[in-house]
Image 1 (tube, rainbow, N blue to C red):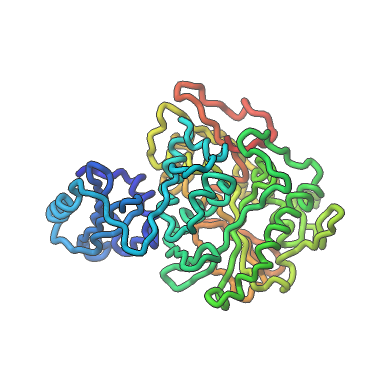
Image 2 (image 1 turned 90 degrees about the horizontal axis):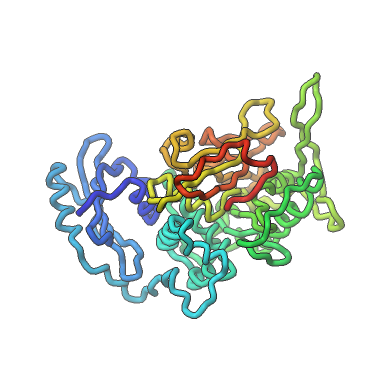
Length: 464
């Protein structure tokens, strides 16, 4: 057997029902068989120092199954000896009776892959391809069309589901898919739970996500806050609300959230966040001069701009009290898969990954983000995260409905950024000190000069 790197264990652990929640017996050492089909974890009790082992092996369809769990050993030598015999190269585990094998992502079965999926076959995105496959294999019960959808026209919807799984289990949640809908049931060890339905805001007229030039952020504030992007969010959320998920017997009486990612225009996720906030809470953020200083002020709005006159303020009254929260991320992208994998220690194959964008400025009077341009393998970038690698949940934001009949507990998603009403004000709390407002990820040859902020125009661009 050979040592299993921490970054790979971190990824494989996302296939456990509770992900990284090892409780009072966290991993002490991890090993893998020479063929990589079996992994073994030595766990040590934080109170008693008692050791136990866990062994997991791939099935014939590559899905992980646990074959040994909680087996206690008297000391480290005996623990390693026990793993040594269990980690010998063996055939994959059989697929249980009455269980359909998980289709392989690389098997198109006659389907024509989309350009977005084909990006995963390029040299610059080999890390992302490996990570996407691991997340797919970690899903507890994906529907039978998942692989085909991912390979073809619904790539980004499936990408969003995969990233949600990673972010949930990274936070130690039990993630299940016991019913066809909603997509996920999540629960923490304290009993807090919620149902989550994933959706993407898609374009009215389809476009090629790979070749289409990025859209520009609207210069007009009215259009930015209450224009086409806000309308697209409103119609997407409205379509899901019409399905009445909270009335389903397994959802009734429990918190229900919709998780939305934006693809309504090329690269729109870079700038559309403000439109979502404006639509949900029925307000626009503007600047004003108060006592000689520029400050942010909120202006109420009751409808979106444009001829539709669509009502604004989904969370401004009790009319949608069955919707507990909306979950959002501006980083649902292949670039995110690459970055997480590389910061966890994946081989880059002679490439360098550089992230440029803006960070949220937490100064009370700040009105602009803080620009950054960093090599994601450099200490300055890795030190932004307490675990020393980019977390899946870094860009996750939860917008709470103040009129929710069944509120979603903040503790259920402890590492997300939470927006909520308190005393008539919308406040924000964050787990991570670093919060990325927008970014793009550049992929360069390892010998290329690392760019600086001066190399880039001030206009926002999307991730490459």
